[in-house]
Length: 425
Image 1 (spheres, rainbow, N blue to C red):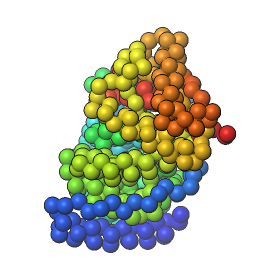
Image 2: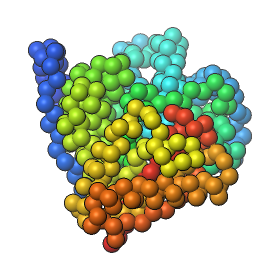
Image 3: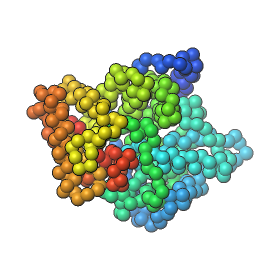
Image 4: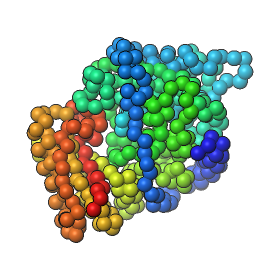
C-alpha cells in the first residue's frame, strides 16, 4: 500500500474516531453490539528477522551487556543522536507506538516502562518534538513515529534456546517521507527486568503469527536508517492506533470503553486481525456476555487455522497432563469445543503439538509435551469423532520456546502452549 493511500485510510479513521467518540458520550452506560466480520483468506507473513538480519553479528557481539536502565538510556541516546535537530520552525509531532516483545509481539511491564522513559527523555531533552498520544487523530498528522522491542537472547545473542540477556531496539521513522530516520540498539542483563505481560496480553488465550506484529517487527528490527517503512506496517497503522487505545482501556479495567474501541477497529479493513478478535472476546467476557465472547473466540480460531497454526494457552500442572486451576480453566472445555467444531467445519487435518518451558531434562520435556498433546487430541476426538483419522499428536519439548526464561509463570506461559498446525490431508 502506498503512503498516499495509507494517509487516506488514516483520515477516514479520524472521522470514524470522531463519530465513535460522539456515540460513546451518548451511550456511556451501555456497550453497543459488536459488528465483526469473519477473517479473510490466508496471509503470507514475512519471517520476523533476528540479529543476523538486522545488524552485522560482529557489531552486535561487540556491544556490552549493561544494566537495564543503562541499556535503555544507551539505545535511546543512539537513536536520538541522529534525530532531526531542533529548529525555529514548528515542533515536530511524534508518537510512540507501544513497545513490544520482539518475538511474541506482547506488551510487557518492561516494554511499557521503556516507552514511558523514552517519552520523558524526549520531553526533557529534545524540545523539537511534540510528543502526542498514539491514536487515530495523531497518526493522521503524519508524525514521526517511534517503535521499540525488547527481545530475550541466548549467549550467542540469538532469540532461541535459553535466554540470558535482552536486546533493545529503538527505531524512529517519518510517516511523511515513509523512511526510517534513526536506530538505537543495546543489550541488558535480565536482572530486575519485569517481562510480565500487561493485562490484555496476559489474558489473551491464543497466539498466532499476526501480520500487524510482523509489520511492526520488520520496521523496527529488520531495517536500517534510510530504508522504507514496511508496507505491512503502514497498511495496519490505522487499526493499530485504535487497538492501542483499546488495549490501554482494557488494561485500566474500562471494559465497556475497550469494547467500543475494538468494535471501531473491527470496522476498518486492516482491523480484521487477531488482536481485534482477542479484544472482543476478552471485553465481552469481562462484561458478562459469554455468547458474544465465544463468537469472537471462534473468529480467533478461524484466523489461526487460516494462517495454518494456532497456539492456545492450555496450562497444565507441573509434570502432569491435568489442567491447572487458574482463572481460565473453567473455559478450557468451551475453547476445545470451538477448536473442534471449527476444524471439523473445514475438514482440517491437524497436528496437535505440545510444548514445555526450558526447565528440566529435555527428554522428560519431550515426553511430557507429547503426553499433553495426546490428551488434547483425545479431547478433540471426543467432541468430534469424525476428526479422529485427521489428527496426529507431537511433542516439541522446549525446542521451540518463544520466551525461554524458564520461570514457569505468567512471563513464559506461551512456552507451555499447545499448537494446532494445519497439515495437508
